[in-house]
Image 1 (cartoon, rainbow, N blue to C red):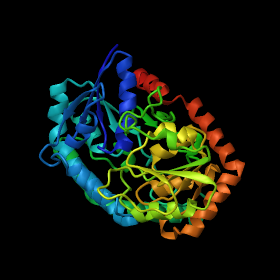
Image 2 (cartoon, rainbow, N blue to C red; image 1 turned 90 degrees about the horizontal axis):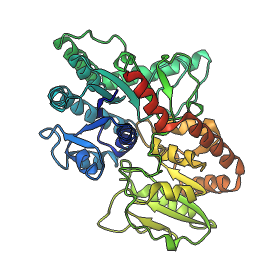
Image 3 (tube, helix red, strand yellow; image 1 turned 120 degrees about the vertical axis):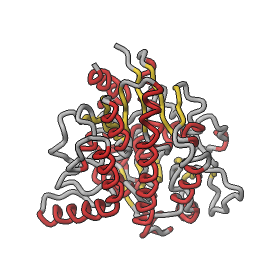
Image 4 (tube, rainbow, N blue to C red; image 1 turned 90 degrees about the vertical axis):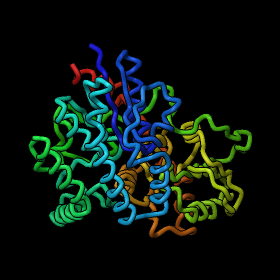
Length: 420
C-alpha cells in the first residue's frame, strides 16, 4: 500500500538533510512525499526531487531564517539555547496556524515529524492523522540516569548524579515553559487532551533516532516503538542539502595527514575559533582544511597555510581525513564516525555538549569546551589524537555499529511497517 507522507522539521540543514534522505528513500519505494517548510527551507530544497510546499511566508519571509541562524552562529552556551528556544516558539505558532490547511490541501495521510517540532504532532492529532517521530538531532527522551541533552555531563548511577540530572531538566523546563504552556493551551482549544509529560508529545506509534545505539548513553525506559537506526543518509553517500557540487581544489591536497575542521552551518559565526584551530595545527606535520560554512565578504587571515573554503564536499573530505574538528553537531559527528574517523569536539551550544560527552565516552573522540579553548590545549589534543591509534579503532567500531543499524533503509522499513 502506498501513502502520501508529509515531512516537517526545523529549516536547518542538520535537520532537513536526514529528513529529506528518508523522504527520498520512501519516494524510491513508490510513495508520495511532500516537505512542508518555510521560504528559506524551500530555497535549499529547490534541486531536491521531492514535492515542497512553502508555509509560514508572513512570520518567516525569505531571509528571515538565514538572519536568525546568522545571529545564532555568534552565540554560545545558555545564550544560544535561549535564542533557539525563542526561534522554536515562533515556529510552533506558525505550525499550529498554517500546517492544518497545508496538510489538508496536499492530501497527506501520514506525517513524519522532527522531534523538535512537536506542534506538528498536535496538528496531526487534530486532523486524525497518524504521525511518526524522527529524532534528527540528539534524542531528548528523558531518563533519570541520563544527563539532559544540553549538558556535557557523563551518566552515573550515583544518587547525586540523578539529582544533578533532575536539576538540569528543571532548568530546561523553565527555559522552555512558554513553548510547553502555549502548546497545551492550543491542545485544549482544539479539543485534545493536554500532555502531562513532555515525552507524550512524541509519537505513540513509532520513534526513530538517527544514531547507532552504541553511541548513545545506556537507557532503560525507551518505548518499545523507539528504534536506533543509525545515520539517515542517502545510500549514494551524498548529503542532499550540503554543497557537494561546489568545486573543491582537490589538487591542493598534498598527501600529509588530513585534518578537516567545520563548525557546520549554524555555529560558524565565531571566526576566532577557526583562528585558534589554524594556529594549533600550523606547526604539525598535517594539512588543515577549513570549511567556513558560509561565504565571507572578507577572507579570514589565519595562521599557517590552511586550505580554506566557504563550503566543502563534506562526506568526501571526511572519508579522506585522519581527524575531524567540529562543534559536535550530530550530522558532522555521525558522518565522521560513519567513515571511521575520530572527532575532536568543541561544543558551543544546544545539544552539542551532550553529543561531545557521548564522543568522549565512546573513546572515538576528545572534547575541548569552547570556554576552555586555547591554542596550546587544542594543539596537544590534536597531536595526541593523530598519534594514538585507539581513537581510530573506536571510530571504526562505531562505523560498524552504524552500518549494522541499517540507516535510511531500516528507517524506511520501519515506517512502512508502522504505516500499514
